[in-house]
Figure 1 (cartoon, helix red, strand yellow):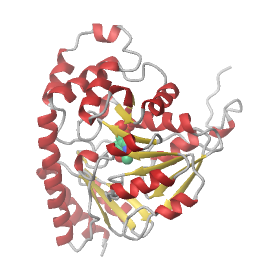
Figure 2: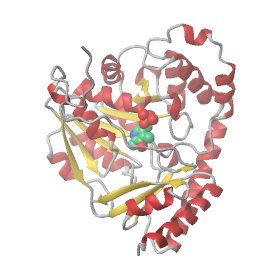
Figure 3: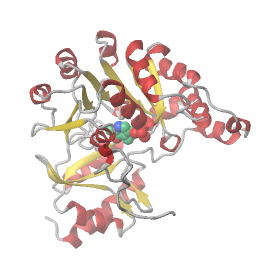
Length: 358
Ligand SMILES: *Cc1c(COP(=O)(O)O)cnc(C)c1O
């Protein structure tokens, strides 16, 4: 007899008992500035390859470990192909890395606030997660992070959601003193901060995790990767398993890396310029946006949830972060073409007036 129930299935693994299905309840909206994807669209060669791909690409299995894509990524990152592991989005790479290095019950440490998926993946892998509150000026708290036991120490730079950049010397300090694997999430590295590539040559326990979802405009294809010494990425690859990058994704992502770099660089430069322009507009409204190295801007905004809802009613979605440590209520605005940001600022002004926010 089949039975639909929201009760937990008694046969399910104990570690999943209190794990809710990840569902941020996103609804369609005219202008979506919530997820920091590339609002200028897909690069031209990538689009052409997508359109011209034949059904035969889909009827066969993809390559086991995306060898062609790895070569293109290696070229882009300036490392050898045996230092790359790919995945179904960098989410998959992060999840696989946790499983590769931390056994159930071992610890993952990250800064707070940071990428919301980290505690979720820790939990899904039956790991203990500790968040260490950042300093009031949005720097990671190095000594407090190192004081926590960790098998995996996660740092995101530029950090999501604040945009704050962690200097290379701080990352080197963490790498030389942490007991486990230092995972550096460089999802936004094209937009600011220094790539930590030299650290993967200096340390055999540093993994740089990156994505093609942001600067490259390919979020829907789900292509992420990590850079580390060959023995380190091999462990991630084993825990990831074969066939995780689909055949179409591998083709399109490889095309973007080999033919679309001018487009990517041009739109990264534009995003940086407009990020500063948006920050200036927010300052002109009496706000204090955090200096950002990403393609987004985060600022303290009282009653952020109500303001966000009132903006959504006007067709513009931004991401509210209620009650962040040292910041309080905040909104994170993704950067895109200026006409969208103008609409966003108008909606923001009206929303604040409606909510009566100071
Ligand atoms: C967007 C984002 C990612 C990218 O995830 P994908 O699975 O590659 O789309 C990873 N880390 C951070 C901090 C992000 O904001």
